[in-house]
Amino acid sequence: MSARIEQEPPRWVVRTAQATALTVLPSGLWRLAAAFGIDTGFSGGWLADVRFGSWFSLYMITLTLVAEGLALLTLGLVRPWGQVFPNWLPLVGGRRVPTAAAVVPATLGASVLTVIGTLGPLGWNGPENMGHPDSPDGVAYWVMSLCYLPLVAWGPLLFVVTGHYWLRRRRASLGPAAVAAGV
Image (cartoon, rainbow, N blue to C red; front, side):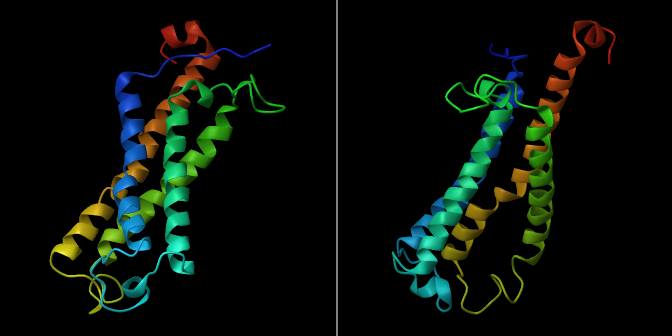
C-alpha cells in the first residue's frame, strides 16, 4: 500500500527551493577550477600550488560534491519524494516520509548555514582570510568574493522552504476541516 502525496507546494516555494539549490553552484565552480589547477590568484599557501590529484584538490572536489548534494536535498521539500519515499528504496519505499525526518535536519542545517553565512562575510577580509598578503587581489579577489556571496542566502532560503514544508505537512495531517477553520 502506497502513501499518497499530500499537497503541491505553491510555485514561489518551488522557485525558492530551486534558488536554494543554486546558491552553492558558483562557489563549487570556483573550487573545481582551483582543484583542476586554474590560477585563482593565491600567491602562497595551499591554494597557490594546487595540482589535480593532490589531496587538497580531492578535498575541494569532495567538498563541492557534498555541498551540492546537500543543497539539492532542498528540492525534496517541494518534490513528491520528500513526502513519500521512492518505491525503489528497500524497506521504506512507498511509505510516508515522517515530517520530522525532513524538518529537523533541514532546520538544523539552515541554522548552521545562517550562522556561517552571517559570520563568513564579517571575517571575509580579515588577516587570516582575504586580507592575507597571499590572497587574491584585483579581479581574482572579486571573482572569488562574488562566487562565495550566494552562500549567504543558503541558510535563510532553506528556512523558508523548510517552514513551508512543515506547514503544508501539518495542514495535511490535520485534515481539511482544521485548515478551513484556520488552524
